[in-house]
Length: 256
Image (cartoon, rainbow, N blue to C red; front, side, top):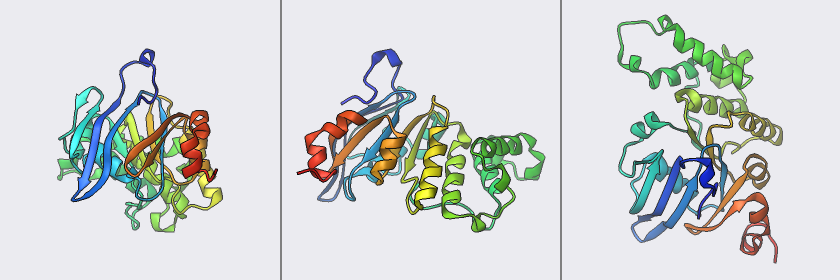
């Protein structure tokens, strides 16, 4: 099944062909085909155990697939390590916050920017001497409307603000494709609204894949939905198409 579905949109940025992952006798993903085009906002939904996080782990190179192929920007990256995929134009956030709580917001983002530059191996210069790094970090925080928090220690941020900083850090590598794993997990309704608003304001050229349990958030942010069920692609299409799908209604939306 093709997500984005129009050859006029140019070359796809992500193609999954017959992707499968087994953990012993457990079939976490089975023969999954999916395509994402530049600018797609694609939500991956499904209950626990549907294979959503496993799918992200395969796309990002954490796990190798048992079978199948992953094409990222027309390159076969099926066996590539994560860092090579990041340099190609991929970014990701995780379910669990991975910030440095004792550092400030700005320092966390600076480390993310530094991590994708050659200077990360330069040990004889103070980081503060790299003005371009700090300028980029501040610019990213300004885009996310977090400039008033950049001197705040991360440990003193709300959980919602920490999740926003993680998204900013994922943008440090200027990704063309960003994978967001449960961006509203553990957030209050107000914080979820803030996160959704922030994601909607991201550059429309960035392709976004989102794992999201909150159906309201998924349907608000995404323009296309893919539904996983026991490791298989149950349905995909526009929000309207997925809402109207009888199998989705029966299994996920509580319609008998």
